[in-house]
Image (cartoon, rainbow, N blue to C red; front, top):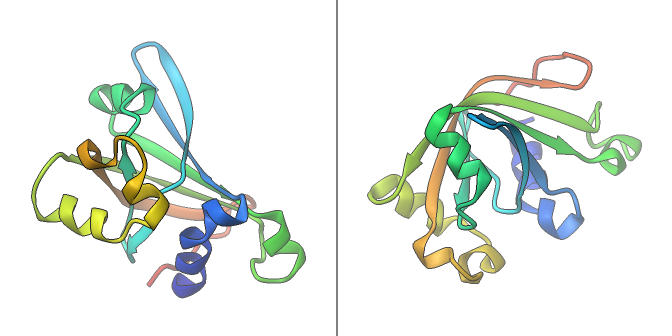
Length: 141
């Protein structure tokens, strides 16, 4: 399952299935599309924060996040049992260092060359729970 999810997240922007990041801050919740979301390893998601807007502001207040991946075509074609996946976790911001460098190295060309990419912040999300929309756990090992 891990390889399947990895491939789906890697092509999410191209396929029109961008992940949505849910955060909460002092002024309430926010949902942001994240075209750079990736399965970093079996315990982490990661993305490149280049817009530095509401999601980053909220992460300064509360590191708890939810990432939602929706791909009903994959469900209809039998690639996924459920076309909506949810990942709950805690975010860490990496403005410099080896984690930032490792995440940047895995960005697709569009994200790596987009305006603001050079001054972006790597966000590593420790996955605490992963499940489909029906509540069935997702095994990422």
